[in-house]
Amino acid sequence: MSVLAEIIDTLEYKVEKLFEKSKGLEKNNQELRLELAKAAQIIQKQSEEMEALKKQYETLKIANSLLGSDNNKRETKLKINSLIREIDYCIAQLSD
Image (cartoon, rainbow, N blue to C red; front, side, top):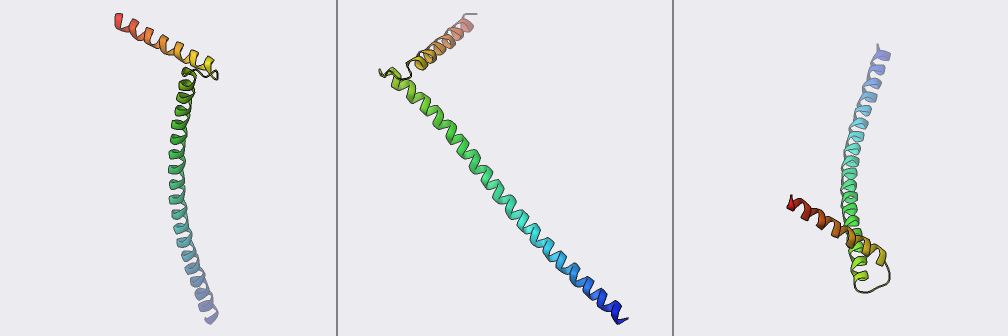
């Protein structure tokens, strides 16, 4: 009977260790999920900042062209033509 008691004790010990390890892994998993969520927020924020900077860069290129710079004149002309078409479309919509 003592052999059976030893086996039960060993089994209880191993189950307890597995339970502790499982709790540790769950805690680690939770921490990693929080870290992942924070990283996703940072990525989202940086993406928004990057888009804003791209728009600002395009605006600065157009402004530079309007000030007489020879660089990007074609793009500026295309943008102005696009804006004129949009205005014409709006006027046509208002006339109807």
